Length: 179
Image 1: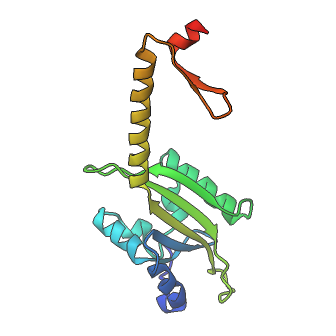
Image 2 (image 1 turned 90 degrees about the horizontal axis):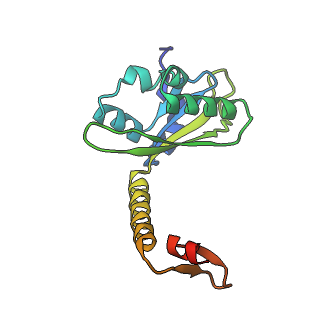
């Protein structure tokens, strides 16, 4: 863990981050978390997270290093944005707890810090957005589509679905045999 961060130095950025509902941090070139928002700190506390590993003044890059495949993907994406190879990186990952299934979308973007021109200047904004509701809806739709396809394929009669131009979009197995 590095030296403590003077929060007054980043009070403007802190105020902006506190307006975000997503878990968000600002990091410097070396990965040190300079500012974390209320949602980030609350999530860490609620999930028995180690603020020494993911709180202000800890290192986000070190926290990702040696992690699972998703942590490694985030680390690689972070490096590409930090090095200017990409203007944005996003990655969907599961973050399940013992009591619930959860998914998050991490978005990493450059942060143009116009007020601080020193080594510890802010370089990246990292937001973790809870997309669990969207994933659950998507899974529900996919399950319904699978049931629909199973029913259609079990029909003895051939069934063809065409678009408005008369092109065949899909057909069941009986139609394949007939056609």
